[in-house]
Every structure is written in C-alpha cells, then in structure tokens.
Length: 303
Image (cartoon, rainbow, N blue to C red; front, top):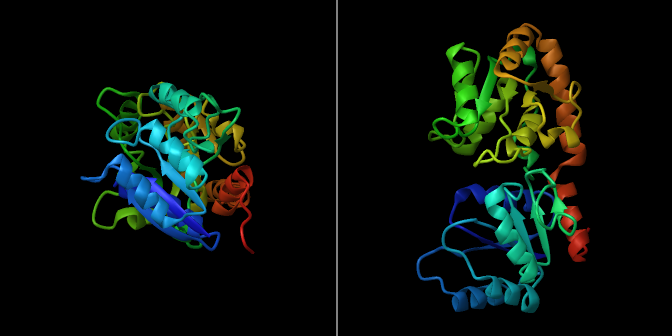
C-alpha cells in the first residue's frame, strides 16, 4: 500500500506517518505544501506522480496552505484524502472545518484531540493521537523511577491558565518540567523523561484555552506507564476511567495534594500507570486508529 502525506514542513507531524508504518505495510511519500516554490499546480502534479492508495493531509489553521478547490480535486481525481486535525475542538478551526465539508475537500475528517464537539463530528471520526509504542520500551518499576511528578510539554502563554498551574506547582517544588522536544535529545529524550516519571501532570486546555482536549501526552503517559493527573472536566473521562486509569484534580491545591500523597505510594502510582497503559495499548494503538480510518474510506489492508 502507498500513502502520501501532505503536511507543513514541521517535524512534529512525522510521528503520524511513523504510527502508520508501525502497524501496516505501507510506503510513505512526503510533500510539504508550504515549501518555497510550491504552487497549486505543482502540488497536484506531485501528488498524482506519487500514485498513492490514500492521502493524509495534516492541516494547519493559519499560514500557507492549499486552496479548498485544489484539495477537493486531489481527493476526487487522485485518491481518497483524510484530513488529520489535532485541534478540531478549538473554536478558531470551526469555520475552516465547515468550509472543508461544504467544499468536499476530503473523504474523511479525523480529529485526534478526543473532543467530539467540532463541526462535522457526526460524519467524521474523533480519535486519540496515534503513537508507536516502540518509543516506550518496557516501563520501569515505579519504585526506581527518579522523578516523582513531571510535566512534559509546552508551558503555555504568559498569563494563561496552563502557565498559572505549572508556575504554582513549580513554586512548591512539586513538578519536574521537560519542554517537549527541548534539547539535543529530541523526542527520544521526552519519552525517556516520561518513562522515568511516576506521575505526570496534564493540562487539557487547547491553545486558545477555549476548549478541553485529550492531549497526545495522555497517550504518551499511558505508553510510559506513568500515573496521569488530569484536570476534571476534560474529555479524557470519555475514553478512560477516572480513579482507575488516571487521577483527576479540580484545583491547583487538589493537584498539589495528590502529588504529595502519591509521591510516597509508588505501588499505587504503578497500578494506575499499568491500567492506563493496558487501555491505551488495547484501544488506542496505531493498529486500532488506522484500522478505523481504512474501514471508513473503504480500503482493505493486506495481511
């Protein structure tokens, strides 16, 4: 099977193709639609030359991107195209998602933020971020993990809710922070940070903080076997079980209390981390993710 990925030049999107090739035999070709010199005509010609069985378009809300008419033509004349959107629940995306739908730009729109509150959700798929489990080898026992509680990801904007939560917990020396892809060790170092953490905090606010999402780090926490601390009210509860697969906090004080309490209970954090890991592997693996997409677009995967 041959897949074409149309994406920005961001390296962040490569893990989606990696998740695909981790679970099915597939040759992947990449085209960056925002590269200098790329035109609508050259994009169409390159897509046609790649002769894919299907196309994955990784959307961008702002910046240089193909027109809806070009996307619709590629979808109709070359191969069924899937729009993979990481922030469909965030309000600034909504008008563009509607335009894509009206313009028949894609065979299927898929959001990976776990929140079904987006235009077209009834016709599309709401899933969680697909991540190859190979990034997370057999998890360490919690008794030997050196980090009590981590936060792995972006700190958020100054004055925002995410930054406020992290700042308060850092002030109390309750968090070890590792910025996503920070440093020379890249994503591998980020994954290793989670593997060495007994607990990891998540703040599920979207970039504009107008929606709550199931962040990719929820799946990553599960693969790392870390006990997840998640904000109450997040759509995470629609996919995992509060109190069994993860812990919920309502306030910064709640989060601080949980971190202090469970820092002394590696047996409890390990049990919760193992529960989340088992559920992620069973229900949100790349095999499950891409299998659902292939079924919806009518492609059979070779055994």
